[in-house]
Amino acid sequence: MKENTLKILIPLFAIVVIVESLMLVSKLVNKPTLTQPETVSEEVETVYPLSLNWDSVLNEVKTGVTTNLPLTLVSTKDEAIDAIDLYVNYDPNIVEVKDVVVGKGLPQPSFKKINAEKGMVVLNFLISDVGGFQLKAGQVAGLVDLKVNFVKEGIAEFTLGEASLVVENTSAKVLPFNNENLVINVTQ
Image 1: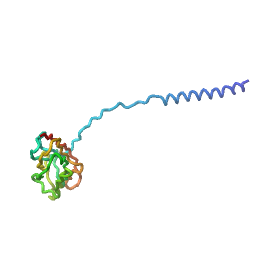
Image 2: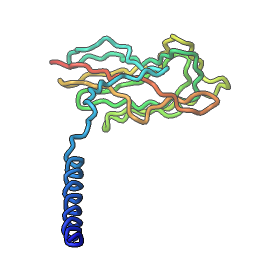
Image 3: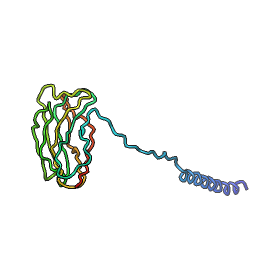
Image 4: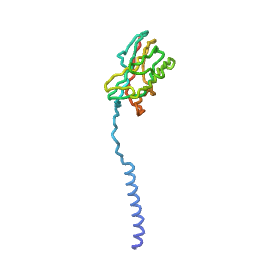
């Protein structure tokens, strides 16, 4: 009789273990996972030691007006610069760049081109002085003045292209910089 009871109890016990295991596994699989709370990402502007700024308060102008738009370089610490490459983009349908005047203290650019078809001004400065172009903390250095004529209604936006760069003296390291676009509403 004991043998018959064992023959029945062993499979029954195995079935109970399997059922309990399946229930435990299903609870683990269906268990809600802890999720990280959603974080609201705010764009934080990175502040770099150098800033290339449009030194113009002009935000609206009439067609036919010719004016100068100065681009300056400011540093929060003392820097020595070996090279500056500027790529200024604009809409050639709205703006005509007539001339580019180099700021005081900088040599004439080794390459200077106004491409009216593409709407781009390219300036490459190579500073040959051993100490480079010295920029003191807080000093505002005039890089260039763009002499522009507004020829058509619209939004005239001046931006620095991605290829624009400032190279540190002696290390040849590219220095990061902040810059903002200049946006001017051109009306009739």
